[in-house]
Length: 86
Ligand SMILES: [Zn+2]
Image (cartoon, rainbow, N blue to C red; front, side, top):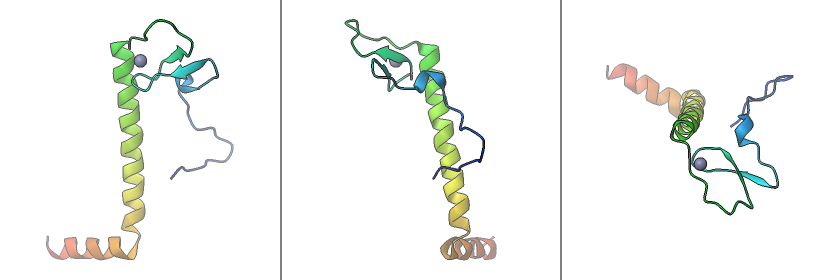
């Protein structure tokens, strides 16, 4: 579930912008020429940063979903039960 901020553009990693002749590497996000005759080798540092970035986005989505769930009747009931059992 993406939030839309009026007038603000979501931050996009420049290296993740796909273009017809370059494709982002699924492991490190680096743009790799699609007609490359050489095998792309990931840069360890870039791969780590890319995967941390992906992980963080996933955690943000989770806490957003969890926050939404807490506002559902089921979420409120589970909070009430958790409070009682404390
Ligand atoms: Zn790569």
